[in-house]
Length: 220
Image 1 (tube, one colour):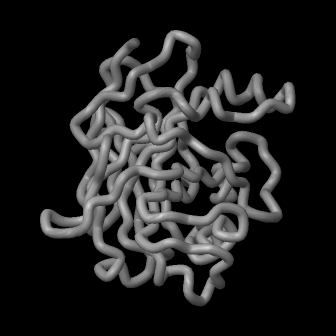
Image 2: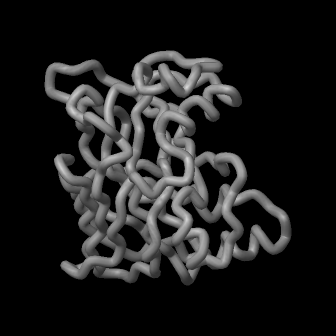
């Protein structure tokens, strides 16, 4: 995905940083046996991992256990640095539903050794992203229902109200670390229900009022 826009007449955004947030839903942290974070847990994914709706997730040969993680994705529209939670949403251009794909076996191995998660999170096609909705059309990003179906069966279902750190805190926190730039994306964490995907699966990710994200799964 080389670029994206919110509407046909809207500005074009070039993909920037892909900022992932780990363990931002308590039940998801619990299902993986992880402690709840005291501050946002931040990691990065490369922009080369982005794909759009209608494309395929490619399962790499290096991993035997790829998991889906459906998420609300925030598109930064204005340069932001050291901003407050009160003004954080002023810097948002739009929202979309996305998937943070994770090579769980590689992640667990990295965690055991104290290594970063870059390999487990960063393969090509590991950041599917749906079409954007303008921020002006989303009254409250903490009042959205999020869902993932695989082959028509619901696997994940939750509400953004269950985030440990809401969108305003995530934007403010990240802006203390990075200068946020137009085109940067924040993947805000996933509710419980993550599981392995397989060749031939059809994934349908949705957030109420957003365009649906459809992707397939194939081998490398």
